[in-house]
Length: 319
Image (cartoon, rainbow, N blue to C red; front, side, top):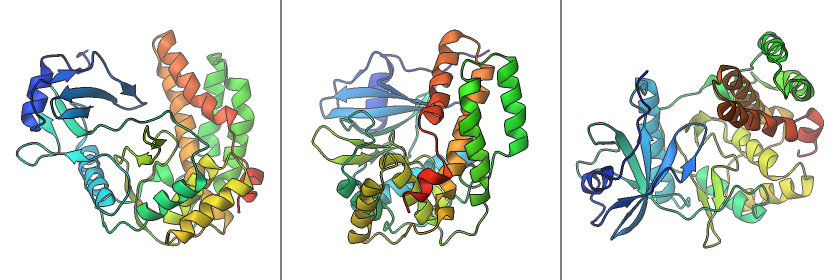
């Protein structure tokens, strides 16, 4: 099995040269941030710090196209006032720098704080409104991850396998999964409108910064979606099921010229679909894990759904 590509100290000068980032380049000893997909390294040069992300060797052509399209949306968003890192291109104008044994992308460095569900509702609503007014038509279309159900049959099979394999969270997951299955009737309704959206505005990707502002990161999954459903995702994530906070976010969004309105329970279809797929993927990865550390990482992912279950009652309270 081939080794997973990684960055070495010797890559620092190559990256700096490829992207014209300055001299005295030095890479962090390892990734400084790591998500479920990909990791970020810090590169320091005499021109300041930069965020470097590895591009998978076996990335599918469709995923590569989405990566490029997401970067174009990020550039347009920053141009139109969305606080986001600067996309840096190679000397030849390419998004991806090929170093021979690895490929990378580079963005400006932002000192991000930890994910925070209690972000200022006025600032949050304003940022999402600005994002939904960005003048950009991307090429990435709709995706079942944001629209399609997992399905009761698939959940029954998966829960049976988790019980057979004695997953430590299997019993606790029963009720949240039942709620997600019950909410599948929200899916499949025609969207109010479609435009290029970020589609992943969870707390990992809208962060406070050390200077007190907000920053939107990780545009890799951008594509066509209903902005009302993306606003509903923001309400569900950041209101802590508190109607007062949800109302403040909606008010700030409208005051900032945001075009969408969340006024139907079916507007919550996108976050419902995403949470179901996120939970399913976490379970699948737990079952496929080959060591305790990997299992623990994916159990933590699943427990996010267990600890903050979404229900019809919690959604209706936000309308």
